[in-house]
Amino acid sequence: MARGVRGPTRRDIIRSAAILPVVAQVRTRAPARAASLPVVIASANMKSPTESGGLNAVRKAWEILAAGGDPVDAVVSGVNLVENDPDDVTVGYGGIPNEEGVVQLDASVMDGRTMKAGAVGALERIKNPSKVARLVMERTNRVFVVGEGALKFAKAHGFAEENLLTERSRKIWLYWKEKLSGKDDWMPAGNEEEKDPDIRWYIEKYGVEDFRPQGTINCDAVTASGDIVGTTTTCGLFFKIPGRLGDSPVIGAGLYVDNDVGACGSTGWGEGNLRSCGSHTVVEMMRQGKSPEEAALKTLERIVAFAKDNRESSGRPKFQTVFYAVNKRGEYAGASVYDGAYGSTGRFSRAKFAVADSSGARLLETAYLFKKEKPSR
Ligand code: GLY
Figure 1 (spheres, rainbow, N blue to C red):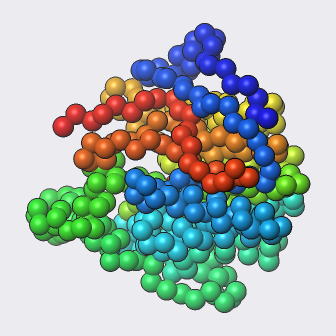
Figure 2 (tube, rainbow, N blue to C red):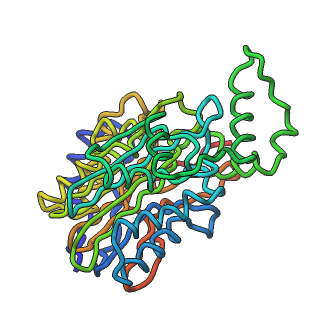
Figure 3 (cartoon, rainbow, N blue to C red):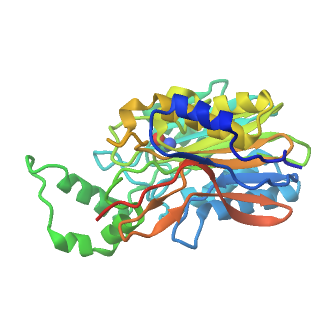
């Protein structure tokens, strides 16, 4: 059973206030959750208010585990569903491209049984970077292959090159590029462009306040016998500098697994997570006895405290980061900086994560540090 959950104590609040010179930290914890093995957790990857790619991923991964399948097969097959889905513009095929309109994908895989890991970065024209990261882990004695080398490696293993830029992603990229500046040669088409269903879809989903979100899918599993694996895959920061890598393919940042302890992965602001070695930090805190939720919240507090370069003028964090953590007993948590986000229509989306175990696949709300304030119009 999960450890009993207590509310924040006076000491927690004083300590948080000391390290966070920002306003209104809430630090809300989630209800206690029972653990059962096998268990799979993932980011929610909401395609619409009711459709979750993460839910499909954990369901698929859990079915493979429940049938006695290999855990790396399970998590990679789960995230492949999302990589293949053009309606998730944060991952794989149809991902939002870099500033030059080229889709560059990043992914990592780690297997606690061997403590081996594989990763690819800035991989072009291959829609399943998680599969390529797995091959780096299993078919080389190296960990990280990037760019042209990653593409050559994928082709050597029989992957077919394909165009990953969908019409929707191309239109969103062009809209962003044309809106960037009045001092270059790229001119917006005017209000007509914003009536385009693909542009409207994007603005409604991501809002105009944060036009460059960092979506990703992370999926972690603990088998019935307590073996632990994970994978993280993404197109990275929207409209990024070509070659920019975020946390997702970096072992210790976007993913870390230790078969004695647990696993953690992340979505959201990659640079903050790189600067905190976030997933490794969460796993190390679990090793020291913290619950997945407490470890994830404490690591988020650390990021918020040092991220002076990424704050609103009010002092509140200007970013979302979410950790997904599970320990060897199967206790799990999702924890986020903010409780959710507002779309351009003012609709609030609560931050969630996906879980599958013997009780089925479901979405749960994350524990969080701050309540998001509704943007004034
Ligand atoms: N967390 C995904 C990225 O920053 O690229």
